Length: 229
Image (tube, rainbow, N blue to C red; front, side, top):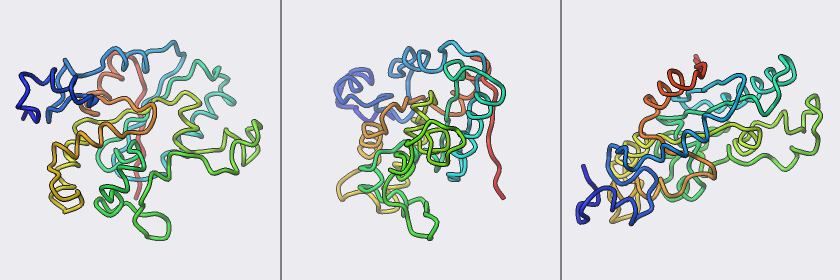
């Protein structure tokens, strides 16, 4: 399915639109920023972990924070020798969407993503740290960078965030079918819009399941996921 059929090729379409991963439903090798992916995940490290997130459970970020702290302060790995990747797909892909996407397509309402009060989430509340955090570098201080679980803080500690191209495409279809897209927008346009409005530092991969296999096989990442009752 080539969404830019009026152009001569998917590669030309990607160049014209600037859409990360291109404008095909299934991302092609020519549109995958493989070099950027390798730079992000293959930096020198003594230990590597990939955290898969499918179901929408923000408690994942606390576990990632605890893992980083345990590896650094407990096991003694230098902070710059720990490589951690967040690999969200399915509903968890929304962790990598900018506020504009959450609001424009009513992501919380569309996919049943709610805050602690049961209200549909209307922005990426997981991205930025509360203002009370980052006032200390003491790992025992509840207000320190080492106790913050925001995505931006985890990224500042070296966590690499991936976005699944396939998940975005599938969610775009669901958004249009559910009536959450502005009038006149079809699924291809919604997908392109989401892919060009991701959080800073997110790397688009063709399919997260494939990326996890690549991380494990080629780059020797240990695999972690969380199961919630």
